[in-house]
Length: 432
Image 1 (spheres, rainbow, N blue to C red):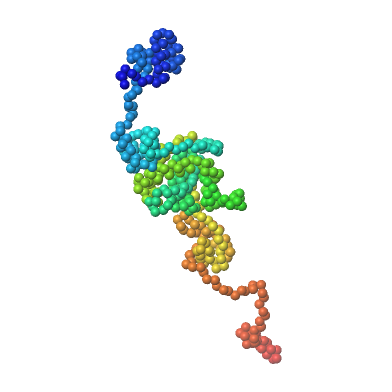
Image 2: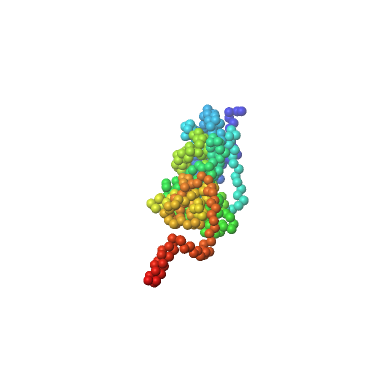
């Protein structure tokens, strides 16, 4: 190829022809600027460059030069090796953060995305076609106005704890998008949920409302009972006692903020715990205490209004919090003053703070610490756990309404001796 030849695009050729006409004074600067879609000042600069360098004057000065942001091949190879060894299943954004944080290599997430796609470490996600229109709900205005809550089953520890999956209970503030509390549990039962909310309430106070799904722990879904306002789940009853409003979502999309949080945590939290070699549920619960502030710095937003709508717990609520957050059931006192509950038998003691009658309805409270309490008319009863089912004692049936037969004592009966002696004395006195 001859050194005198230069490569120009069609746009550059067209620009060169217009500038030549300007130099020949066939058109003025205003007309040239209008044809090129540039300002008059830019046209003057290009005209000066063409006069000085000829056709090369319309070519951008950076043509053929490497960018100042070009990453050296050695650095790219190092990045590829690190990503392949440690972050091959990380997303580009998360991987770029870890490269800067742990390896002091700063690279843009979009640049890394293109590299990872080329290395087959990342597959671009196709855009979803939304077939169903959904109305966007704006955020709440203040912190603590509404808390979204959910439980998510997932192999959070990737089998390092010997189990297939754990349940992560999570709460996020709707106004700020900040995580407030996280806790790993084995299941989404009422006792783990009550434990979660006790920790939440003691730390943050009472939110105005809780937004959650219709899982059986939170709502009765039986058709015959679902519309009865007097029939509540244990969770609804406890929140009602605390004065917290419960809002049930009709679809997962309705509580999209907590659903998207679960997806993000399945990506970031899982990988962070893998890097930290977290292998037990207890270690995971300690780890999230450090993870939450870091997450909130990256993803939290500023609420529309300042302030905190969480209400601090009163002294009375603090004293009765374990009682409120307990599983309550009603049982009947048997004739032998025993109570059966969950295949266990409880014997009420002889001395109680209130009168207990057979067939009384007592309330059994299962506390989150495993203790059991039996109450009647707001008094806690004394009881002991029986090792086995009490034996039934056969008793003769007594007809309380039947009268007793008349019985006349004999003459020598002690009851009649005094009467006989007094009668003899009277008879002797009369004879005299």
